[in-house]
Amino acid sequence: MRILIVDDSSVVQAFFENLLREAGFTDIAQAKSAPEAFALLGIDNPTTHGPDIDLILMDVLLPDMDGIEACHRLKSHPRLRDIPVIIVTAVEDLDNLQVAFDAGALDYLTKPPNKTELIARIRSALRLKEEMDRRKAHESELLILTRQLAEANRELERLATSDALTGVANRRFFNQFLEIEWRQAVRTPHLHSVIMIDIDCFKAFNDTYGHQAGDECLKAVASALHQVIKRPMDLLARYGGEEFIVVLPDTGSEGALLLAEQMRQTVASLGIRHEASTAAATITVSIGVATTLPQQSITPEALIAEADRALYRAKDEGRNRIAVAGS
Image (cartoon, rainbow, N blue to C red; front, side, top):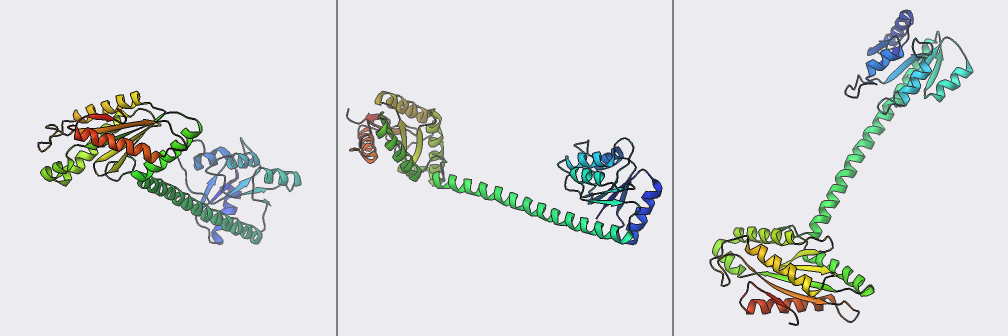
């Protein structure tokens, strides 16, 4: 435990140092003024931490700045405020005593101090500092654990709502999202559209190039589809296998068809080789689009079914194309 003696008298400094060393305290620092103490502590230099001080014995009558003002400044410093300060003075003045406590001093002694009383108060102050350090260390550990827990929870939430392979939303999150959007649309009616997307001849791609290539293809297609979506309210999800689905709140059939065509072209522009496809020499997608005005009598599952039927019509008509429900 390191103790700092701040007194402009060399005699007094030597007196305190001798008493402290006799009591077993050997790590002692000294300063003759408040500015010298501040320099030692690194109070004015944010890049300098300064030595770890566990207790300060501060004289009241100091050159340049009195001990009470120095104590007040120390207690205003975030890094130094927890260091106990015992004010020492030759003047026994109750007014000084109250001012010292108001400035943040832990204790107050008059010169010359009684040796037994001085050592007892120093040990008491150091025990308090040690307990404060333990609590701060515990609080820091708790803060770190709290941050780690928050990060873990965020990661768990991401994993729970995202498809592990492609990183887009998973089907579970998509269903929850659509349910919430649907209820809101029923209260304040506005059109909703759904786009169903299927990678053409994907089984043949896996059989030809292997499942690792198939996984890379899925990730590339998901990324391409996601690039087309611009509005925060729109959601792309992996619906299952090689199928993706998009929900477009407040979007009519024309807007949905335009977005679907952009998606089809963006996937085609990837140029992923697919010699086993019956649709093209590269990876393509078939797309089904459905639009409705949500009502209590209509379920979101009914809209998805319409988009799914349109998708299968697009596949039956030759793939690498778009079909719109009801057209």
